[in-house]
Amino acid sequence: MATRRPRPSKTATWAAAGSVHAAGERAIDDHERGPLMKRSQFPALAIFLLAIGICSGTQASAQDGPANYSGDVRSRSTLTGDWGGARNDFAGKGVTLDASLTQVLMGIVDGGKDTGWEYGGRGNITLNGDTQKLGLWPGGFFMLEVEGNYGNDVNSDTGALMPVDSNRLYPLPGEERLAIPAVSVTQFLSNYFGVVAGKLDTTSGDANEFAHGKGDKQFLNLALNFIPVAALAAPTSTLGVGILVSPVKDFNSAVVNVMAISSDGKATTSGFDKLFEGNTTYAAEGRVKTDFFGLTGHQLAGVMYSTKDFAALEQDLRIIIPTGAIEKKDGSWCVYYNFDQYIYEPKKGSGRGIGVFGRIGISDGNPNPMRSFFSVGIGGKGVAAGRPLDGFGLGSYYIDVSNPKFTGPLGTREFLRDEYGVEAYYNMAVTPWMRLSPDIQFVRPAQKKKFVGPDILTASTVDVDMATVIGLRLQLIF
Image (cartoon, rainbow, N blue to C red; front, side):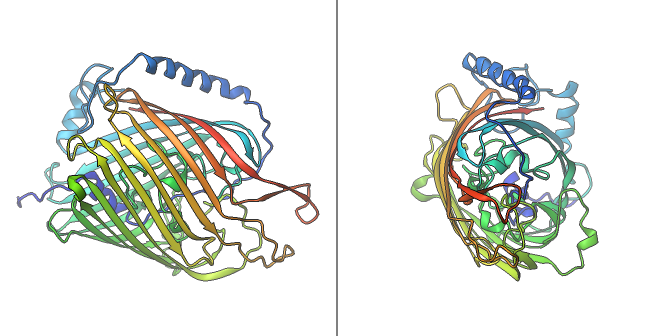
C-alpha cells in the first residue's frame, strides 16, 4: 500500500466540501402570534430550567480534543457512550458517526413586527469515513449528512433580513423537514492537492475560530456566523465539484479552494434535474494560519460569481422579507474577507483562550440587496477556571441595504433600510455532551414599516422598531 499522506484536520476537510459559504433564511409566511407563550411550549421551558439547575452544580471535567467515547456518563464526550466498545472500534477503522439535537427557546420581548415566544430544534447525524483506515486506498474521505428540524422560530417576526435563530434554518427554514444536505467524496492526490465532488453542505466555508457554524455552538444570529453577501449565489446544499490546494504541504497552515456549484440546489432535492440549466456559481477561497505576536490566528479571503438570473430578495428562500414583483438581473458577484486572532492563548494550538474576529463583504448591490457588510466581535473558549469546555461571544454586525426596484403596482416604494444588530451568548458545558447557552440580541431590522390591513395596496403602515430577543439553547451530543 502507498505511504499514507498526512491526514488534514476537520477544518481542511470541511473547507473542501464547503469552500463557498451560504446560510440563510427564506420567505416565511407571517402568522399571528400573541405576546404570551403557547401552551405547548411549557414542557420545553421546563426542560431548559431543569438544565440550568443541573448546570449550577456541575462542572464539566472532560477536555477538548479527540472524542473520548468511553467513560462514565459525566465525563465521556457523548451521551450514548462507546456502544460496548463498538464505537471506538469503528473510529479506529476510520468510521465515525456523530449525532446531536439542538433545541432553541426564543422570544421577542420588545419591538420587531410582533412579540411572542417560539420553540424549535434541529437534529443532525453525520457519517465520516477514511478510506485508508478502512483498508481501501490512501487519501480518500467520504461524508454523509442527515438533518431535520421541527417546531417554530421567531425569525419572521423581527423584520430583519438576518435570522436571529439560524439553528432552525437547516435543512430548510420555516417548515419541518428531513433531508440529506451532503453526500460528498474528497480525494487527496498528494500532500499539496485534492479534489471534492458530490452534494455539498456549503455552510462549512468562510470558517472562523470564534464565529461560525449552524447556530448550535457559537452565535445564533446568521450574520455572525458567515458572510451574508454570499447568500444570494450559493445555496446551503447543492451539487458541486472543486479542487483543494496547499502551497506549503500542510492543509492546516494554508489552503486554497476553487469550486463550481449549482446555483439552484436544495437540501430536499438531488439537484440533477437542474444541473444543466446553466445556473452555476464559481467561487475561490483561501485561508492561511498566522502567528502574529506568537499567537494563533487565521486570515481568509474569497470571491464568488453566479450566472443565474436573480431577483434582489429571491435568495433561495433564505431572506425573510417577501419578494413581491421585483425586477430580475442577470448574474451576481461578491468578495469577502474574515479574520480571527487570539489575544490570549495560555497554550499555543490548544484551541483555548480569548480572541477577536471580524468580517467584511462587498457585493454588486443589484440584484444582491446587501451592498456591503461588516461584523466584529470577541470570543473565548475554555478560559474560566474549572470550565474547560465553556465558551462565550459578543459580536455586532452592520448591513448596507439597497432597496430593490418593483415592477408591479407598488412602484418605487421603499420598505428597507440599513440593518444592524448585537448578540451576546455564554455556552455552558453541563457535561461534555450537554451544552446550555443563554443568548440575548438587539436587532434594528431592515424592514422599517409593516403593513396593517387585508390588502397590501390599501393597508396602512406602522414602524418596525428595534427588536429585543432573548433565547436559550440546549444542545445534546449523542
